[in-house]
Amino acid sequence: MKYHPYYLYTALSLSVLYIIIILIATPFFMRLSMNNALSNDIEAAQQEARIIATMSEGITVKSDKVKLEELKDRIQKSIQGTNSNNVFNSVLDWSGKYICYPDKKSIGSAPPESDGLTPGVQNELTGENLYDMVFKKTDSIIPSEIIKLTYVTDSDWIIASHINKEKVINQASVIRSQIYIAFIIIGLITLVFFLGTIRIISSYYEKQLALKNTKLEDGVLNLSKLNASLENYQKNLSDFNREREEDQKLAEEQTETIVTTEETKISKTTTKQRILTYVRNELLPIATEDISYIYVENTITYIVRKDGKRSTSSESMDLIYSYLDEKSFFRANRQIIVAISAIETITKFGNSKLKIQVNPTSEIDIIIGKNKAASFKQWLDL
Image (cartoon, rainbow, N blue to C red):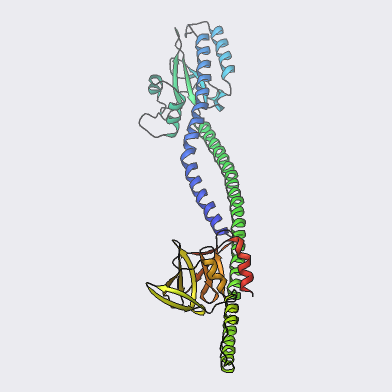
């Protein structure tokens, strides 16, 4: 990956954030799960206690011993081994000793002195209360295993509901581990999906950016070639003009005759060396080789020289262009004619258009449309 450090930092940031969420959410989900589980256990234990209480109504120490022993055996069988549950029941007699207990070894013994029976009788027993009794250390917590006492009508028996703290704590640990595992699996799946999505999207945009950069490099290369061609052409034109001036001087030295009227007429059909312009009310002839560019603005034809001075002409652009040497001047559009010697740079403009920068700087943008771009490039290669 080209940007693998950024993916690593993103993954670490998301992982830290997700761990914080897990640490905050796990106690909530664990409490919710344990409340539901304990509520179900309490409901089952209370239902069992009501059944035992119904069976034991009217039973006292003076009752028939055979009937008493049969009832004890039935109750003992129903609660035998239930001390492995979160909540289980036992039966106490009037002296506070166990007469029925899930573990027969405890029958005949009394609950530990630390068991607090009174708070269990007074408080309404719910899964939430039971959870607080096991996991929170407050003044209302009773350390005893006995959490509820149910008195049997017309009897000296008491049904005690116990909580198996060790079992509840172990179950809470299992639920906590399951919640952690679930969060980790979900987090890993989410992280892989998120990073994969980012990778796919970033790869697409990287390809698009690389494609645009390639097109831009091609455009810059083409413009560089075009500017190089312009410089070569300007150099060749300068050499050509210098040679032409030398030839003209040599011809002037060798020619001593006066140009005839017919030669003058013929010269009108060829290129002119000067154009007559106006500066205010004065007539000013300008040599074509001194012209930088010619443009029209508000129906007025302006001729700008290489030194930046501007004058006007009464002739149209079409007529002026017919006087000029096509090797030295190009009709960029209906509004402007530019000299090859005045062009400084050529840049790409819009869709297949070219923009020309001249010296001196033009007051209007010199834009060559896509229809004339090909002929302009061909003109530069002359």
